[in-house]
Amino acid sequence: MINGHGDDLFHYKHLIKSNFSSNVYNRIEHEELFERLSNKLYLLSNYPEPEPLSLETAFANFYHVEADCVCVTNGATEGIYLIAQTFKGKKSAVWMPTFSEYADACRLHGHRVSAFYTYDSVPADADLVWLCNPNNPTGEVRDYQRMKEWIGAHPDKLFVIDQSYESFTFKRLFSVSEVAALPNVILIHSLTKHFAIPGLRMGYLTGNAKLMKEIRLQRMPWSVNSLAIEAGFFALEKNLELSINLREYLDTKEKFVKELKRTGIVDVWDSDTHFFLVKLRMGKASALKEYLAEEHGILIRNASNFEGLDESFFRLATQTEEENQALVKALSDWMACI
Figure (cartoon, rainbow, N blue to C red):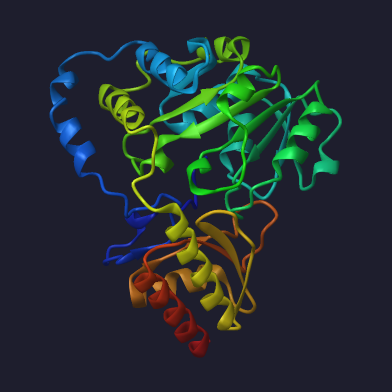
């Protein structure tokens, strides 16, 4: 289960000034949402809808699909576990390295889980194929056309594609209307990432109506609370638009990557979004993490617990230019000490 993840500030008693460990961008302005929710606190006196049908209908209208093609969940993570539960006992293949919850959810529900690392190595006997796109922790977006051909060549497999970071890339991804017409694709979406509201837990699944019906049967009543539902309506009223300049943000990321490479201390994986994977040329990511937290108030994500990665890997999510520069300097300081 969730262990060794990013955003683990609760482990540190001293002040963390800069948090690079979470892929949730924490510079998004929330004042308007906070005001909206503060005016809706009276909703807490009553139960929410047992099933968030009104919000599912609103999402469906936004995407121009039938309401049955959307399943709103308590964060993307509930969606992951609902899918695993719906298809319990099946054989699942997970494209590694990636978020551990796909494999954890599958094992909890009796799946036989295997790992694969390329298009051509997906196990022939897999019933479900899980992948993250853009992928966590690498930030890679897989080529749309190749993905489409790959899925079309395997009609016997159900492809579960986690697009939680879809708002933070310009690369082409699968659309909701597209998968609504496909028999073997489910998309996972996250307002947690999109609007930086991890405390509210708001996500949703999309796919064809038959698949969504099967998944909804597993969902507990009242799994989505009233304020989360209200936040979903707020997001739709904002047309799911980011409150940041994505081009500017990704340009900041590219500058950050170049500065990291110039240190000669690390190798950086190519990324199509705001976060990326880094490998130390010497030393351990766990030691670097503790040094940065204790000496500089900077938190990074030790990525050594992702299957397929070793103790030299860590992940960074781009912050402000000032914070990025501070991390680069702190990294050089650390290397001078070891």
